[in-house]
Image (cartoon, rainbow over all chains, first blue to last red):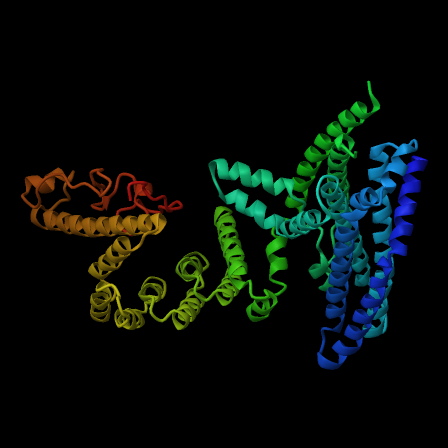
Length: 258
Length: 304
């Protein structure tokens, strides 16, 4: 990979760490240990279920919040601090800057998710006393959550390349919510007719599909995730994130920074 | 070519390729996950829990669940499914989230009783609706309808219609229906009255079409019964069966050529039975069909 992109990515990662982004891990650790200890005392038979559901949901929500709130500032902060001019005055192309920023934040989220995953598995070990073969599917759910982060990060970058941080956050969060209901949207498109059908179908395919990436419930019920779904979801997330990044590059390339 | 133009062109081409790729992949994912969504929805099978989790946005969530009911039902119906296992739980969630979603009781009970073969569950659904909407006379009507049509329990149907007739602004026909049902539950006049009331009171095109088709079917059943009686009378008088229905006219047993509700003349079969010419055009008929006839999925006429 291009050395300049890697440089920007590692700087973005270091900056996120310096911004104390990883402090969320403390809150996560408290949440997981509290849940693991409490649920055994107040309920019967659902300890494993609650730890998986709560753990994976927390990983997802913490990561989405980080992806949106860090992602929207990746470009605007550099412009506000005027550090962007220093970067672009060197032999760094604008697209390299965007891709580097994306990879830096994606890396931060992967590291963050790795530590949270350790917390989830530690809680699982605490409530079940040992690991089961089906706990392996929790790894797949975590992998899908990382794929979600890639899409959201790319979207946050896309919005931040042309809009203010506040509006970018609103847009990205709205797309996250809509994407969660993407299958309903496609179902709705399927039962409409004429122009409404075309519009609804177009919108349904344009918004990100987060519902297929959410296997938390089935994993909590120890149901396997088909291999072809893992492959398709991987390809989809990469392609969708790529699409959003291309949009960000196109806009940023033509943006007047004076 | 300028480097920035090159980047723009490359990014543009990549964007379009990714967009196409994402649509194709999504279609493939949808095919892999057919049916998975609703089952996942029902992992939270407790309507009350779901209501709490909705954080006050239960109206919107109820609308989403109602849409899921319609999609689930439509999909199953299209595939000719015999079991509608998720229909009951989905309706229960929908109506708990929004107990005033009238349409969910009206259509939902019909889906459950007629297609889902779960009349008892349909009754529970409508009774739940009545508890939450005691002044909606149509719910009592729906309840009576299920007792009448699906369970053939005429006293219960009469009771439901009577309860409905006491609701303020109830349709005056409910009282008549209650009396008629108590007196002569299973006869053709009662059936005609039920379907006429449905036809006159509904605003929904499909329900209206269904009622009109039932009214036509009742007409056919009545006509065929009468014509076959006349054929027997002719045989008793003449010692042989008539060749055609015109023989009945010639014997002064009736006037004119009898036609079915879609305008086709009835036809007399060699064994003395009377049949309609196009049974597929007359859904729900119980008489006048050829031996071994299997009715297709009913199609309602646009004029209804």
